[in-house]
Length: 131
Image (cartoon, rainbow, N blue to C red; front, side, top):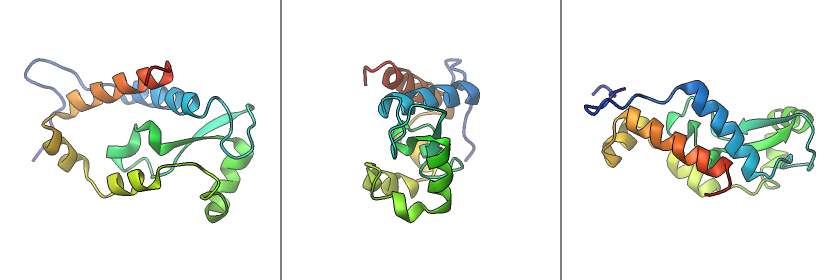
């Protein structure tokens, strides 16, 4: 099965750059603009808990953590030290990490274009504080 990038109605797939930008904004909004480990507001980065190549979670704000550059580096070097400190829904992430994008699109009956537009809308809502 191939994943459609356009629907019969002409819906275009949301651009990855737009999804990435809004994912970052949504993650920062969720963590209130502070590092999840030390609370710093300086030089924040957004870390994917489940790697970006897992497309079903790539733009899910629940798969992101705001971290300052120092804590981000430490998290990559010593992940076991910080997992307990991060208040994440690990059950949610575990459940979705076992689902492929093809399976997900079949289950929800959407094309990839429709799904990316839905994700973009959800990210914008989260970033603006309405989700």
